[in-house]
Length: 170
Image (tube, rainbow, N blue to C red; front, side, top):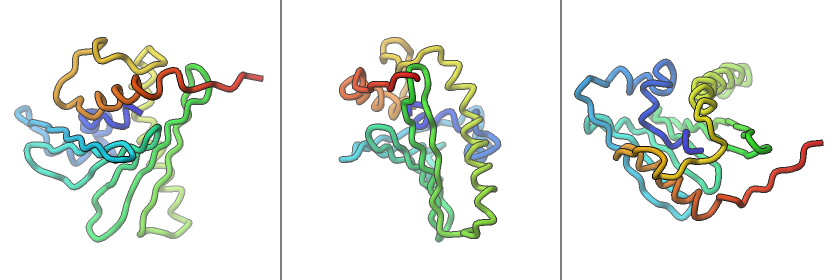
C-alpha cells in the first residue's frame, strides 16, 4: 500500500504510463510538493509539480484500498487498487477501474492490459525492498515528498501491525 501512496516515483517508474505527463514536464530544477489531507476514511494525497496542479489525486481507504482519480475532461476515470495480504511474504494486488467512457466490453482487455502494465512497472521496485514489513520511519531517510507514505507508516504501526492473521498453507 505504501508504494501506491508514493507519488514521487511516478515520473521515473511509470514514465511510459501514468507518470508520462509528469515525466515530460520535469526539469532538473523542478520541485514536487506532496499534499496530504486526513479524511474520515483514510486520506487524500496530491502531487503538485512546479506549482502546477494536473488534477490527479489519490484517496487512501483504510486499511488497504486506494483510488487514483485521473483527470479526463468531462469524464470519470479511476483506478482502484486493493492490497491484500495472502500469506507471510505474499501480497495480492487486485486492480479494477471505473470509467464512464469507452464502455464497450471489447475494450475491457485493453484497459486490463494497461492496468497490468502499470502494476508490472511497480513489481521490481516492491520486490526489491527486501522486507515483508513496512519499515519504521527511523530506518530510512525521509523528505517532504514522503508525506503520504509517512502517514501510512504511522497508521500501520498504530493500527495494523500484528493485526493480520494468515491462513495456514494446505
